[in-house]
Image (tube, rainbow, N blue to C red):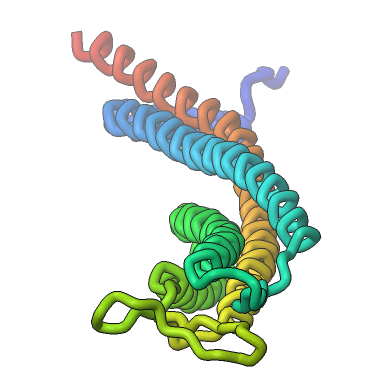
Length: 295
């Protein structure tokens, strides 16, 4: 009768499998501390990357919200300034003539002329103040826009917007210079006096006199220029608004891109957390086994 024992082939496979398992276990036991450190490192780096992207997204979102709030306030101021400018345009004064009636005394003529000049200068100054208000608003908006662009990621479109902001700033500086020149002309616009203090005038005819002024610019020129500066300020302000809106559109695109990247990071973080903890736990487990075996 033949004895029923394990076949040589089956015994060989079992021994080979046992040796393989023992070999892997030995490798894991030998490098158990490395595995522990590696697992902890994976968890730590995953946390850092996830938090960094989350903070970047939060910072950008907060910046956009703050900038949009400031821009909304700027818009409200501009709407108010548009109302003031429209009222100025509707009530635009025609240049008052610098003549007096023949039946008036020279003293009365001078007083009337001075009153007319005062009325003109007041209206001119209102136009200049309107132009200056537009200029100040544009300067503030462009300054904030330039700082906001620096917080966005670099790219061709961002550089294009930065170039556009710089162009608007150059236009604003030219506008500001013109405001200064006309303001000086308005301030210096007075009746011209001779060395002995008498007002300079010419006889037009019939006892009517026309007074001369200290300004080289005619009143019609000053009025037209001051009105044009206010209108140009309004146009500049509208152009700045268009630029700012384009910047916000770009910021929204970047925000959406960062939000999508952050969501992907969160999904990968879950996987890497599991992998890291598993590797660390495996290393710790074999480290404990190694210590027990040594004892």
